[in-house]
Amino acid sequence: MADTGKTAKLSFGDTELDLPIYSPTAGPDVIDIRRLYADAGVFTYDPGFTSTASCDSTITFIDGNKGELLHRGYPIDQLAEKSHFLEVCFLLLYGELPKAAELEDFEARVTNHTMLHEQMMNFFRGFRRDAHPMAIMTGVVGAMSAFYHDSTDINDPWQREVASIRMIAKLPTIAAMAYKYSVGQPFVYPRNDLDYASNFLRMCFAVPAEDYIVDPILSRAMDRIFTLHADHEQNASTSTVRLAGSSGANPFACIAAGIACLWGPAHGGANQACLEMLQEIGTVDRIPEYIARAKDKDDPFRLMGFGHRVYKNFDPRATVMKKSADEVLDLLGVENNPTLQVAKELEKEALADPYFADKKLFPNVDFYSGIILEAMGFPTSMFTPIFALSRTVGWISQWKEMIADPQNKIGRPRQLYQGETFRDYVDVEDR
Image 1 (cartoon, rainbow, N blue to C red):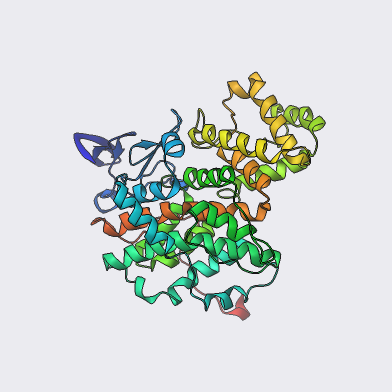
Image 2 (image 1 turned 90 degrees about the vertical axis):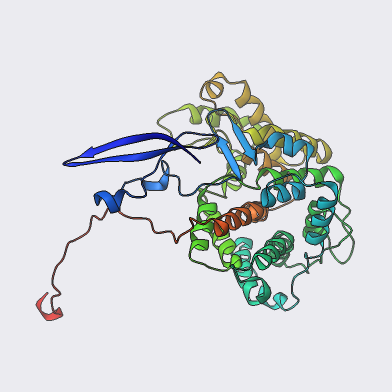
């Protein structure tokens, strides 16, 4: 963050302030208002913090107007095409792409931590049989601090490192076991001879009666889903992790807080909402009706999975995800799945319609990831847990960066109070 030497002048009443202006390496300049309350006795008002930078970071940069997403400077499309998830994990955690020996060591450390403490199996069985997998994940991840006492001291760099590796390694196991528990099947243990994505798919779909042989096309598609969701700057769940971490909470509690925030349908449930919309449409012949409704400004219906709050042009993740979706659908077919038939036809008709092109309502990453997960056989209840295990490395990277920041202090947003002012208590018989 470079001091530009320029200031923003703020004047109100008899008060005049010169506020410093800083320039980032990318993105708009920022006005430093940290001294505003101390020097002038006023707050700023910014619901949703949409115009407020809560931290400085070196991890992820988004330019929504350009449709650009960079991790440590590397564009997401290159990472998704040329790299793989664990290499991107290393990049997010440590700031640089690994050398061959570093990557081999990192992959070995993650692989050797995929098993859960055996006593945690009892914890799973404490949930109702019909518990939502996200409810299970939130509880189990939060409970990890009760099983892994040797990695909860946030002031010890080595313990922070151990906790980071443990969560990246164990979240797929936890997510798969949450799924197995929800469908009443026995848990499947991880295998060290499989890659990260293949291991997850096997833990979800293998059964004791017969093994599950992972198709490399499905494994690659799963790895891309993990990669494309690994981090997304200061979104709601990441900000939640940072806010929880600012209090000094242990890393497992912070990630559990992030998972809880991600569960909200406005955040992590977008691909589930997209599939539910496709199921509502039902058949290909009803697509024109729903496209007409989407164009009608008086109709509250909107096409889920099209357009993006941050990306005002196109979602840079969607192009890569579309390629995977095409490969998966070619492999598995759509003939017997009406939802996937609707998805393919809706994509074609929307892309050919000038209305959506003019408004830049292109299919986003949630549209394609939902299609892929549906084709693989995941229920919609598993979409957000898969998002959570993908995003864990981003949360951890942001948490580690925050802990090491000398400017770190406990988060304490202010408010615009609109309630009653001072009034005396009235005894109940006098009210």
